[in-house]
Length: 153
Image (tube, rainbow, N blue to C red):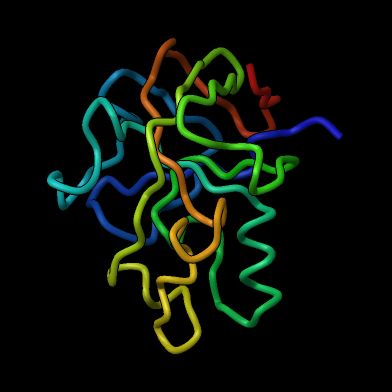
């Protein structure tokens, strides 16, 4: 199975949910048209793009959580990779864009509506290794389209 970008999301007003798009223009600062409300914890060159794997999303849905694409603030939803595929330093090519994972994206209360009983820490790398969103910096800028192939370098 080829990994693919199956969800592209931004919110020009900031916060969650992020809204679906058919393409994202990605530069060193992040996804064009996406706003960060809390720049202390989100955004900037080291946290320019937020990624989530469908394997993590589907696992949480199977546990009964109402999580959906874009509801936890991810810009890029990737299908075809398992939770242990990503770690700090991993390089990911999505279409013409190259990203480098810089760290996990610790969950916060703003995404609690995506979790049964508001238990947003279910998306914590500390609680479940790999079951998290990831932040990445941009090594090569460009445009990502829905269904672009994703590969690990």
